[in-house]
Picture 1: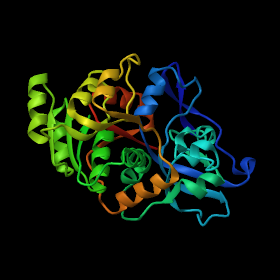
Picture 2: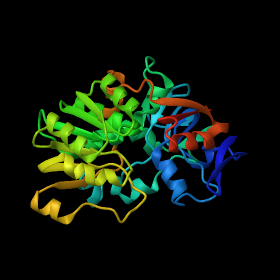
Picture 3: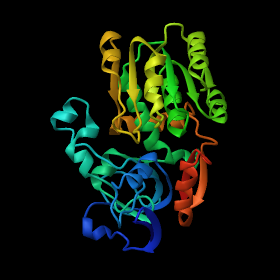
Amino acid sequence: MKAAVLQNNKFKIDEVPKPILDEYGEGAIVKVIGCGLCGSDIVKIRNGQAKNGAVLGHEVVGEIVEINSKTNFDVGDKVALGHHVPCFNCSYCWNGNYSMCKHFKATNIFPGGFAQYIYVSEEHLNNTVFNVNLNLSDIEASFLEPLACCVRAVKRAQIKDNSNVLIVGLGSVGLLMGQAAKAYGHKVYGCDLIYERACIAEKFGFEGAFTLSDDVTNFEKIKKIAPMGFDTVFLTAGATGAVDFSVKAARDGATIVVFSSIKDDLVGFNNNDIYYRELTVMGSYSPSPMDLEDSMSLIEDGRVRVDGISTIYPLEQLNEAISDTLSNKIMKAYIKL
């Protein structure tokens, strides 16, 4: 089968063995229809975390073509899926830190979503695979996992009713994060360096969105919306300056949720800001099966929109899709197989 195989930080379209269900026993073989390009895929390549020979991609929508399972799935089902499954029985899981579970980190689809076919295990079928509603497009279904990441972040923040929430960074994740926060009943604002993205946020129902410029102007915009600062700030931008801005935008006693990695890992939050202002700074990483279920409901009900976010590329143009994403030529790529 055809797959995009990583070689020296670039993808090469190559022929690789198709997964054989009999070798795994239970589970399913899914023919990949398309797969979203996640920012984490790009980070793994840039940071050398992915080895030569790897097939990445996990925001998959596909069709079951072979199955041996005790679940109710069947050949011909169109599905979207999450790629990690927690054990539900370790100290991490007991405390709700599912994405820290060792079993969670060890489980995956094989070989990866940028391939024509993948193997999905029985425990994936039981926990992280969902039938796609006929009313949903393939691209909408591919947002199941990234939206679930945002759902988990909103839940972890434990935001009080009717709070003022700011999303710092209005890329694809920021737009999903804001809509997820709105779906849970909060007043959501957004900011970005790119004017067009602020316009998309307002189209998606944000109470307001603004572009960032100089510190004085930014401060005036914040004060006009939230005189004391924002109750909760979601940091979804990977720029180093976004850390300092998030602290300035937060009110005393606020919560800042970090949902992004940055190039300079030495940049962090000021200890005295956290101490004297009683700020809560937390990270949020990857979703649980329950978050995936909630994510699917939000997409099916139309409470989260993704129209206009993705640009379609064929598998053969995956490298170009990555380059265009990094240069902000596009917001997000959907790789069609």
